[in-house]
Image (cartoon, rainbow, N blue to C red; front, top):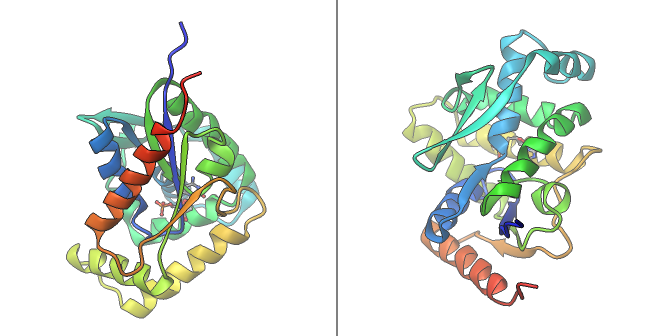
Amino acid sequence: MVILVKAIAIDGPAGAGKSTIARAVAQAMGYIYVDTGALYRAIGLGVCLLGLDPHNEKDVTDALDSITVTLRFVEGEQRVFLNGHDVSGEIRQPQISMAASQVASIGAVREFLFSLQKDMAKKNNVVMDGRDIGTVVLPQADVKIFLTASPEERAQRRYDELMLKGEKTTYEEVLADVKQRDYNDTHRDISPLRQAQDAILVDTTGITLEQSIQKVHDTAVQKLSTQTSC
Ligand code: DC
């Protein structure tokens, strides 16, 4: 029996609101939300825990033999496991963001995570967010959205989030980090962040989170309604 599943791919730079928006859209549509950044973060964390340099391609590639990453869904919420341990909280630390961005430029890491991401979309209706979902992981996605906002606005949002969590940082540091990650993500040789040709651009600069969710939701529903089932 062929099961027809739908996929909504949401790509864009760090801090564009992808995860919050994708989660809300998935919930409204009854789809599973897959946050692929969490997978790269888990590898970044694994590499750091092994005391390795996330830039070192050979060491990181060798380390993959001793790393397992799995996703589970608990009451609809994604949890990410590194070697059997739930690391969903730890992977959100700022130093892990940078390590994730560094290991994400390594081909062996991208290959390692490719089938895991693809398999999720084979069996479930998904909203999947990341950097290369519409271009590489799910090039046949039913809906592709490229979500962005200015670096300054993205840095301000991230800064506000970190302040709420009680992290010690400055707006300038967060902005520099956002710009560095944008550079890493768009300049790597393998699967760089770019808008797929058939992706719809949604710029959330100057609009509220609720407006952004509505915009992405309406765009997805409209695109899905124009598709034929055969
Ligand atoms: O979305 P995020 O900030 O949690 O992602 C962490 C890092 O992982 C980000 O710097 C880029 C990388 N990433 C990627 O290269 N491809 C993806 N599909 C998702 C994330």
